[in-house]
Structure formats: structure tokens, C-alpha cells
Image 1: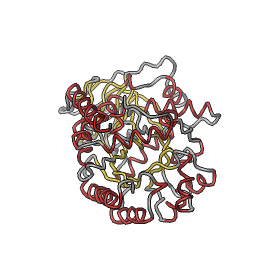
Image 2: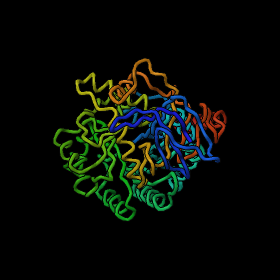
Image 3: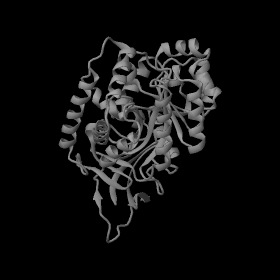
Image 4: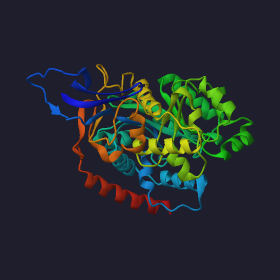
Length: 419
């Protein structure tokens, strides 16, 4: 029982004092007053905020090991080169260590679901299970995809496809599988046919970055005489089960073509600024625009604030509540269950924030408080699937210091192999 909390819904926005009963991983009752049962565990919230757990619709957990990696040059090319080198040096233990520490940072920031892309070309088979194990120890929910690429030849490509299909079939509980794609501008038609085959066989989501760099379309035209998006459309790979991240260099025609497909478009403003590739016009992402954290920290509050400020600076401020709520809609579609609304029958993924607003907090001011006030420092407790994973800022299932020490040792080893 969560009693006397300030219950926050994102879209349509609402802020009201009320109570929730949670049983077997789901919200089963909500109201201004909910009667207690003799066996209830009761938490009196005294007006603290209760919000849906946050969703990052595009992330690289192994990006946690990038902090301090030397880049040769500036911009997107330098960042891609460094990330590819790190991926090539990852071993199974490193994969799990990065996933665990990324998950801890997400949990402390109020993130409960992450859509993650992974690549470890020297150890492909079983790598998504290692990611899941790292996440599972901490308690997050996730949709995991291996990035299929031609960068390591036909054998590496087929191993990537096999890893995706195998994990999609095995994922259960708080985990689902997806098909990831990387280096779309050089990906062969055979590879795209293979991706289509896996998607048809497994009915999974397709997850990839698109139009992140201006050179992507030029390279695609040189090799295939078509834009990356045209190739995806030609192979029947864009639908309501497609997640397209970045979209920085999409033309207006491409955006218009995408909006009619039902695809999810993910904005990652912090990554755009860090890689100096430009910033997507997220205000044109339509009704399915959402937020992703890419290889930055798994902090959706920080991402939301950066995205809104950047869009306002461009003169086209986004509806930040919709972008956040769309993350829940995407998670609901992936898990085929309601995730996000604090309503009966929804999965109990939620966060408690100790935020004392200095101005009135209601449906009309909620967005302003999200943009200017709320942050990860206010996250007090986090529940995933009806289980407390963070309590009073303490991660419950693991020893964070041990995980951090393991991640540092992994980083040293990976960096040494990169040289």
C-alpha cells in the first residue's frame, strides 16, 4: 500500500493526492482513500511524488566503459571509431560489468526500462544473456538487441542474426529481445534480408540509429544508389515495431514518409551535442517521438531537460510530457502489457521522489517542474515489477561498490586491448 502520495500522470497530465494497492507486480486499486488489509505492507508517503518509472528508448550500456577513453580527433567520426574499438575489445565479463553499472546509474535516476543495443564482435554468442544478467541483478526491465553489421564479414553478420533470434525466443519476464542494426549505410542487401527474416520469424522490434551523421546518406547513395531510409522501406523494415534513433539528418520528405509508418523516433539531444553531429528537429517527430540516452549516462531526467532546452533554443520546443509518456507506450507495446499509467491492471514500475515544489504543482505546471526542478537527486525509491529495487537511495539487490570496482577493472582491461 502506498498511502497519501502525490500521484503524477504524464499524458494526459494529472497531479492528485491518492493511494495505490500493489499485488503480484500490478497496481490493483487506486483512489483518494484505499482501505488497508491486515496483511498490507503500508508506506505513508506524506505527499511525496509517485511517478511512472522512466524509459530510455535507445541506449548503449557498454557506453559506461567509454568514460576516459581517448578519442582521436573530434566529432561523430572520432566517437564512432572509439566506440567500435571498445566493442571489439569487450569480453563476456566486461559486457556484464558494464550492464550492471549502467543499470545502477539508471536505477538511481529513476529509470525502470531500457531499450539497449549491444555489440561485442569477439564474443557474440550469448552476449545478450550476459547483458540481461548484469541488468537482472540490479532489477531493471529491458529490451535487448544485438547490432547486426557487415563490419566483420558474413560470418560475423550471421552470428549477430543468430544471437538476436536466439535471445528473442528465450527472453522472459522483465526481458524481451529485439533485432539491432549498425552501420546501415554499408549494410548489404543480404544482411537486410536476413534481418527481415528474423523479424518475420520472431515478431520482434527492430532497433537502430538512422541519419545520425551527414556522411551516412552520401555513403549509402555511393554504394546502393538509395538513401538508408529508402533501403529500409524497400525491404519492408519500417513499421510500428521499428525504433529509429537520432534522425538528425532526415530530410522533410523522409520525416513525412516515416510519420505514416507508425515507427518510433527517438531523440538523444545530449549525444547529438557531444558528438557534434547536429541536433535533430525533434518537434517534427510526430506523435511517436520519445527520448533515448544513447551512450551518455542512463539519466532520462537529464535527457528530458537537455532535449527541451535544445528544442526551445531552436525555436521549436517539444512537448516533453508526451515524449516521456511515449516511452511508456513503447514499453507497453514491447511487453504487451500496460506500463506507465498509475492505474489498476498496469505493471507496477514506479518511482518515489522527495520533491518539495517551490510553486504550485498541478497538471498545468507539471512540465515546468520536470524541465526546471525535478532531477535524479530527488529519486528516493524505485519499484520494478512490484518489487522494490531502490529504497531510500540504497540499491537493494547488489553491493554497488563491488560492481563499480569490477567495472573499473574491466575498463582497464578493455582499454589495454584497444591499444
